[in-house]
Length: 616
Image: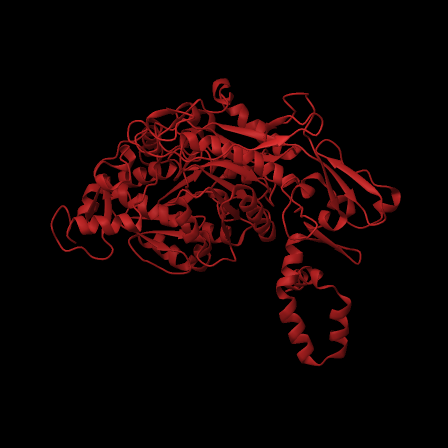
């Protein structure tokens, strides 16, 4: 169930109240508050019968009432107050809790207690992205009753308490330093790995907030995979945060699952065998179990061995003969089919369950969206940094029952879409930090009635399998066990259990979504099998396919041009600046420069630009 009332619901609530506050009767402003009668945190649904239109002051009075905390949040509060106030040995307190466990509410409650105890005057939150800033502002007001301004670089909304993105901190270091020197400030650092000292804003965080009274560090992934240090916290030799136990509260993912704060996850390792047809008729075989074996001649081709890596091939689009239509029987197509079947099962228990695709590049995201639309019949949402209003698209997806959203670097730490349950994982960054953050997007519970599992579909690749095994090891044996397809379906209106064959709920009359099951035929015996079957249920034949790619398709995740091994990012950068560079050079009339750009492929211009930038 979503947390916020939709625009339509807000309009109806205002009409019902006659345009006046349901508490004090004052005429409502356009920015009135649509509030739950029974708090969402207490299980109150976001429906009209549980809503009311309030003016801001009346709603803030409600927000200041004590919130019922989860047991771990209460323990974290007690431990934080003891460490920061009573002992006062160190101004840093760390909360390391699984994604979805409720770190934001815990942090807001600690801030509220420090404010009411007279220990701080102001609160500054640093969050990774604009969408997370918005969520902080809402939760902070609900817990403390105080407005929290938003500083995102695109716009500033200044209040006593503010939440800023890391990027905004970089441009306002002097301002935040002045705030910390002129008031007693609690700094809350959300997803603290963003404060890498070697990163531009890491140094800014260290300088701007050095005079803060207290620092509360939040993380769900206490690991750095890149070797960089981080401000405020030390790391051990294994890349994990090293902070005194007395100044740390930890809630592991396994503990959060057992306490039903998070849903258990099942990892599907998607195997594949690729055959790459080279231009001279030679074939190279690659699988998740064996590397490409190249002849001495082929080994001399720069970058070919790297390009024929199993994971890179798994991220290579496969098209029909028209070079435009995604292949349903390609590697990604079989991943999508498995994920569709799981999402269908999940929507029998959670009618609005959604799926997330994390793609490595924008072209790959567009390919995956076309593939899903072709196979599932619904056009997914796409979000990436080059789209205007990407944050609004994410928010719109959060409040609908659309099945799929495809993301390039937009839906990661802190982005809360509780209805996500299936993840197709094809990222550009193969780090444990990124992996755990991605898994965290699909394990958030929607409440006490949530009995679903999360499913992660990923290439069967040593690196990712190692990360998955570590997460599985955190779960109890009972949590790791997948009970299989649902035996009944749950009405999303009244939660009544119904037979899988039911078209309507017997209690409230709700009409269930109907989707015809899909089957595939065995090439050996013609028997029909569920689309997700790995072997034929009739004759036992394996459905593991040999995916055939041309050399051009295999190199889509990078480019090899005239002896240069250029990765996908550099290729995209080159293509993005090519038109402007060509126009400027041609306009210069310099014959040597014109000849130079003719000799240098535009795919390599991105690398050249980087080299010039590094040279200063």
